[in-house]
Image (cartoon, rainbow, N blue to C red; front, side, top):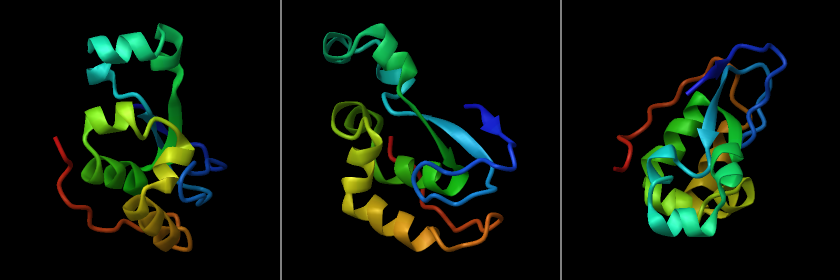
Length: 109
């Protein structure tokens, strides 16, 4: 995970500006070795599918969805935003200041 410190950075999910962002792999790296993922996505797709998101959004995504579920069903920005729990969190977080850090539950395995 790489952290971006760019002052003009904007989270791809909640849209907040001026936040530090991390790279969220839409197809989690741990799933790249799975046969069904290799059949469905070529190497370029697996490695290049990345969103730059703030830490609260990134943590929430992993708290709500497991890695296999992310790789198979929620491997795009639109799919993530279509998930009701993620959409509700993103809407709630969108008007919070850049330094705001909500409590996040434990990530799913």
